[in-house]
Image 1 (cartoon, rainbow, N blue to C red):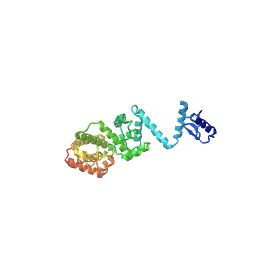
Image 2: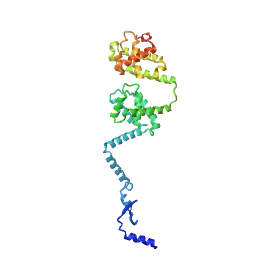
Image 3: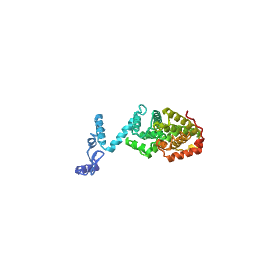
Image 4: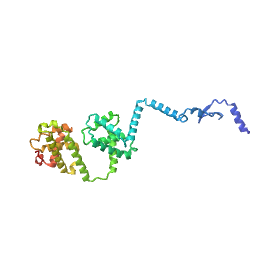
Length: 326
């Protein structure tokens, strides 16, 4: 042993090892560098979750989950994640969670009109989007609610604020900005799927939408409010069919220039009043502005404005040749 090694041994023997520090699990004297204890690393982690059995580990995690869920904020996040997980699991099979959401929205009595045909349209649109973008846009609940609104907004009198309010009551924490962002994502994605539409195709699409709205609004006018003007209900149904034929005729005569920046729902309300004014004097007072206002939720002022626009486009109602009730 040389002198240097001998000096180090003497220092270690004389050191009291009071200045110690744990380094990487080892207790080391900072004065002489002697390792005093080599198993601190293992003693400290003997009960760590990485060294326990699978059964104990699962129990340990259940306890931690239970404690965490006692916090209301964490519990709410956990509940929403579980709902989202169920949506991911069954969207291609039963579609149960989505159908349940629609049924709950309808149960609030806000006039949400989603029949079987509309339901299938919502389902197909959602599944097509979900197939390609479920991993990209995580919150498919908001995407689904946005698709519902996009499908019904042109055929319902519900305001978007009321729709959002009911969604929040059902536990879907959304606002107008979130819903608009989701709709923009959907539109942007769907635009990439379809080919570029020419002016003629867009015009036909708008006109078909107005025709559907016209039929829907006309069917919402109950016979009970107009029965004094008809012999029976079949007489009223016959008049509605003739009005739909006239609506098709007039809509087809309107050019695309008048339709491209149109509020379809308000325009349809004005169209009902316009066609009502084309009938003879005995039936002219059936479809009044107040009746249409009550049914479509548009003010008499708006209905009159749309009526005058139609009068400028199609001419005065008295000059129109109509189908006559036999």
